[in-house]
Image (cartoon, rainbow, N blue to C red):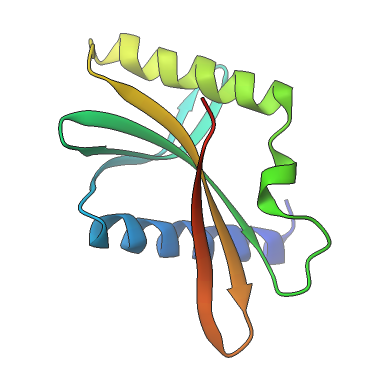
Length: 117
């Protein structure tokens, strides 16, 4: 990942965390790694666990963040979430979602959440 891409990704994750907190989520962990992959944000709300993949795009980006979630990527996210659940002995209701962040020139970012499973 290039330095600029990393900076944009880090900025997007920070925007996502602030957005989730405003929506009443409690952030449990960020950048959770397993042998299957990484989950950007793990949060809870109303006694449910929420696994979030964050994708950030700059203005005038060619593709939408949803387009970056291939079948293989979604399978890695699911396996990583299951690994977290197993490691932490969790048996709560859980969801996996994409947080799409479209950075806007001179405007607030556009933020949308899409369920992935």
